[in-house]
Amino acid sequence: MNIQLMTDGGADIPASLKEKMDVDVVPLYLHFSDGEFQSEGNKNVLAFYDKMEKQKELPRSAAPSPHDFYKAYKRVDATKPIVMLSMSAGLSSTYENAVAGKNRLLEEEPDRSIEVINTKTASCGIALLLYEASKKMKENASFEQITAHLHKRVEQTTTLFVLQTLDNLILGGRLDKVKGKIASTLNIKLLMRGNNEGQIEVTDKVRGEKRAIRRFIEQITTYTKNPQDRALFISHGNDESRAKTILSNIRNKLSFKENYITEMGPLIYTYGGNGAIVISFFRD
Image (cartoon, rainbow, N blue to C red; front, side, top):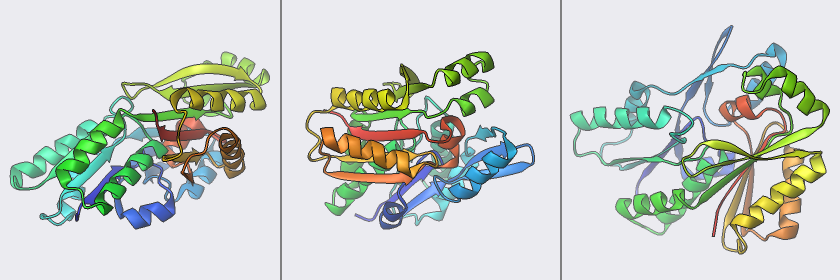
């Protein structure tokens, strides 16, 4: 069926899949002291990494406005249904604004079909759901069938994080500098996950890289024992080597049917920092 897939700048989508799926991305905004940077997933991400390194500054993030979403929806042919997969409402006002933009357009064009879905995830978790949507489209599922399936899949999505450094959390004021320095000295790695409300919570604090990765993979096995027919998505903060090492270790334990690695976009990198890893998959 001819459906337009959309998301926002909180999604990190492998370039090859983004092109195949024809995903329209509504940018988020990142404000530095010297100007604005638009986050469109992992587009222009290398320039952002470089800017972060040079400025030693954590930008302020802002969601797209209702008008931004209204304009994005308006550009789509009126006869084409839209499925908008929004970053978690527990992390941003993006979902709320996406709904407001939809309602504004429907006041003008009530015959439009637009479904805005709170994914309760971000980064490659949204990519996983977009990929699921594209598969249903290839099966010629109806708009109603696809949206119902995605709402169900949202509740089955697991998103896990492991940080390499605490630098960005310290810069952003989310971790006391003194505590941050102590944790860095002790080589502490934070393991986190997206909870049922779509918010991020710390699940473990592990000393040392090898222990952190081992514990990270142990967490995966608590959510799925039989991933043979499922896809695994991984995004990394400017450290593809670390992502590939983790993927190799995962493969030694679990055989996912498909694996996709992509760069972490500006928004997620702002909080995760260099070497951060996010993985998403559907749990049992």
